[in-house]
Length: 115
Length: 254
Image (cartoon, rainbow over all chains, first blue to last red; front, side):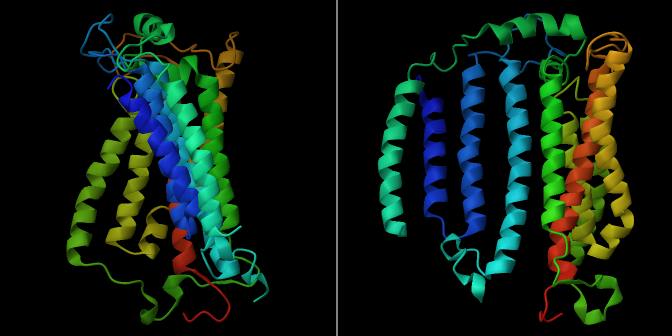
């Protein structure tokens, strides 16, 4: 159990990529990419975790209380924001792909172009 | 490449990558044992140095302020990209829903959804403002609070109609919020230069930790980021709604 959260991160990355590779629908592909990306949140936060540590917010607890790493918290915040906006951009691309090809199936992109 | 072959190639590659990941990750310090020095150092000095009770906010908007500016512009560029991708194409026409007959209405909402949506609107907007303005004191900040604020626009849409949404938050206002947010971050950075320090230096009076007016530029940056994120996400909402409600492709039944 000493490395369980790291293994969860590795599993999420691989299962997300598996979904991207085998996807038959672009919206599903984008969701799988989000799953793969969420592995980075788990990895970052578990690297910065310290057993018994509190949140690095010293409003009710004095400075010097054992707290988790604030740097990975800030990195995860960046990660989530970038992930959300990239998903929005990819979904916009999927809307246009559906308009031009009449399908969200990645296999059919480029095939139905002449219709 | 057929899907079956692609799956097999992936499984081989994933087995190798998985083995490498497990090998690498088991070499990390045990879960719960923190090894790096930076987190501990920041937890010791950040409150005294920056008077921000929330050290994550101090890292995001002060120690790593320049990275957060890059992140904010990624958001700005992505919203811009969505707006460009989802504009009306050459062969498409725009039909504002309010100019049409009554049969063009989107599926009606039930009274339950309307009542709950409108009842939640006020508290959600207030909570969004709270989260944005208390980012340096408690969990939250501009990014989180901005998304909560944008949820207010979604509630307006759910409990009314697209037309109502356009009326209560016109595009000019959201454009303005988004661009003010992006430019405001740079402006706060330039204040540092004007004061004779470096770009994004925390030159405002720091105050006492735990007070609403403390931590210098950190709450100001939270505010501009909140504007940017709220404006950006409402714009995203518009763009996707426009695709289903306003923009018509040639030959599409309206």
